[in-house]
Length: 385
Image: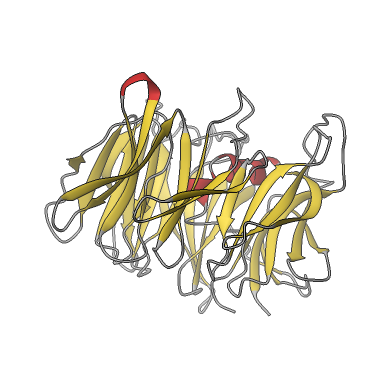
């Protein structure tokens, strides 16, 4: 069985398994905890804790919990009086792939966002490496580079060279999160041209070469395939709804093929790269959404459960190109999805489920349907099976 970290209805961090049996509290500090994030080796869980208000205005910290020893260490404390980075989101945490560093996005008292890096096992607070607003980030697969998208600009931090952020080519306010290829030192980013024209660029930081993979109009978001052979791209958002007009599969020679025609709020590659799970509207409804599952090769889709997401789960969906790097809904073996909300079809618009109504749900993608494993507002898989 795979372990799950989750936040229960009382805003406390717990561990359980994918059947929901024998939940264990992390006994974290503060009045409430949020946003548990696993280390790559499954030894640690990082989470935020705060003492007053959903955005803070009190004591807000980031804590590192060692599952092997049971010890908990505060690795960051906000400036007194500063808020979280968003409602119900005190910080954003992203582990380096080698598990030796943790990047944090935090808000200062001056209302700016700052990117910090904490080295696990070393003394002292995390160090400021960059700031900007908005601020999105991605680690290279070898953990040497940290790429920031700050405002419209891109900056690269080299942890084996000069620590000063280096400006990279391509500016854009038409997307959120850049990301690194699973193979080599190649980053993907969007560059904005004239008349809101976007170019998906691949930049090799070792030989300083760049190529344009595909161009399109307006906003977009993309995620690399697990093998680094292609990207999935969504674009052409529908008004203010945050839903995009489908999903395109793009190979590294620039051949694109539309594989999903549904409106898409978020999507996530399966670990094998054979499928993409995506969030779309329930049929004929405005109050709920549902999972779609597309076979990348054939383009055939089928649908899973209808549900209303919690506020935290909705944040994962709305900023999916960032959260896919830290909170993928796929289980490590690709057999199930984890998400939080209230199951069921809702035709008309309803409020998001509250803490008393929300459940952490595990859904097998091949058989068995959804299982409510805990009362809670957010759950995330351990990387270890």
